[in-house]
Image (cartoon, rainbow, N blue to C red; front, side, top):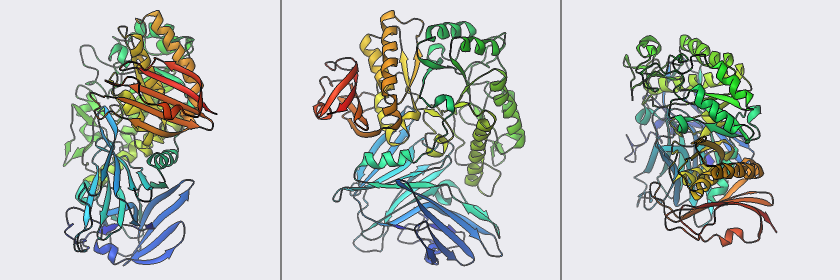
Length: 612
């Protein structure tokens, strides 16, 4: 594997090999480069009056990569491509990627390069290219910024994860026998991005990390553990959350919150999160009035402080929902065009939402008052940041739409940092219609994230398991929505899915039967015994026979190991009774089990194991 940089400056030749319009790699900018320095941490190239530093620093089990372009000349240089990582001289025959849509996050797509039509041409006249990525401010809306190349003959895996919350791209290409991988910010062709670097200025790309190993799960574990999340002190021991959204569906009141808090007191749950609707105006939908952030006098006539005091009196930390970067159609801020993101001078409008220009000091001051002020004044210790639309290809305010988007998203991330600077103990949840922002640079700004909006779907354990390859399970908040009509097997099925990450309860908490409530308390006790495995373990097996998220069939077994102890979580789906898991139990003693027997469909059981 050889590290280098792919880039193109405006005016340079395109790469040839029938690739113009398909990839910007192999440009004249690269062919004109001279390598002037190389050590184990970086390689330096020069191109005319420019200097390109390709960093590839070893950090534990991964190599951290990024590029710095410096203009040492007398004239402006416009970049249309600058890779975060680029490696060549690789061999492989299978590409693994993680696909994603709303409530269908993290599906593993594994394709042979033959099936992708990526075989070497009969001569080097043609370049084979597979380029993929995502445009906008929901970085995992279609794909995760992740790929793993497998060499099935040598049992070698090379994986990459990109830290980019705006538009990004990844590419695999070949002209001859060996393969090259590169990626970073979406380029001019793909993401409407260019950046003008003036004399004496430099531009630094987002970073990426690369890992190697002998299995897919090993490489994914190394990539995920390279993430360095900001975990707030109250959240270090992975406490359980109760979010009332699937209880009230956007209609929280002092009365129903009091009933929830009374039920949760002494249960082992730590957070009670007030979700959307606390600000809505009389007769208006909760999603339409986001942006003004005035506490609803009709919903909370005595304000929120009385409610948070009540929640804390029951031993719980109160949390509050915001969609702080967006503005709803019925909010006054919707008409504040001078403070909103525009494209070609027109406010970007999508799904009844517009977007604050987070680069604008007025917006920062406004949100400091409305968000940070509301949290501080009312004694909240938990913030759920939702995000329910995408900016799309880009916005005004820079030399290109893509650069405008990059700047706007970077400004959003700066506000996340401001939140933690002003409230160091604040626990932040990263949510974007569930899992649309589950990429590393966002995950490092939060204690945890909503894994999906698949609140009550039978595919919850499948999504939760797939996300082990992409984010740390200790940050993956999984819904366990419990209904009064659920039988005991359904209750256990939902709770066992929560054992694949952070357990988040919701649903009919004050209408559920006493038998079901005792089952929940039992699950909380078991969760306390397995938390360290979730937090610090390594997922070694994700075995899932289900192909469909919508109608899963067969079974799933997930094995996560920490030292001599392991957690095995098994779910059966349609036609999945009596799954074959004997090999996963072999050589182990069952210390404790929780859940149903596995003799029927849609049942689940978790096993705490010890190697003998």
